[in-house]
Image 1 (cartoon, rainbow, N blue to C red):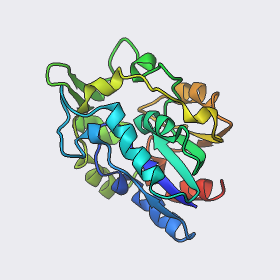
Image 2: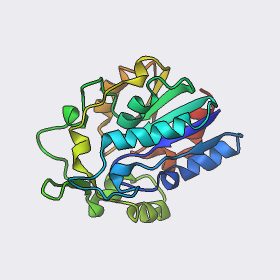
Image 3: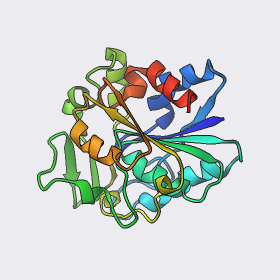
Length: 231
């Protein structure tokens, strides 16, 4: 078994966000990869009005999934769940989907389907520039309040602007309809309220609640590694 991890919005370097859990999984003999998301500028085109969007992100993750026929657990975090669900559709090697504080969208739904009329204060939107991003000053208290100081510091250096059209682009497939699915509710999440997560979790086969903030794979990697390894 191997694990493919899909990071969330407005950050780069998925391998870094996943690295404490990846290390814990390696101790259990499980390898993992974290493909790049082009809409976050992780490619040869910058984010922006003409930049890559959801389709390019899905293609990147799908390429990682189809690179081998080894049984795979696909883990999607936050926005990464939108990407993971579509990328997994029809890929026989995907044996389980894990969504962490994420969105379980039906075909035709997009991130904007679940947004509120009032933008959250921890995100900055620039429609003219075609990007959005996390507000750096609010990153620590919103997204990683339960993480060690060095994680907060290093995570802040990996914030990026992302192509804003990903918010409106609908998913074309929902792999969680056909693949066993676990939803991880982060009970102390200050970015995505636990109440909203629990609503999404109703669409999953199994629900696990962790006493963590938005990034349990950074704050409690052993918990996440145990969960994934035992699927």
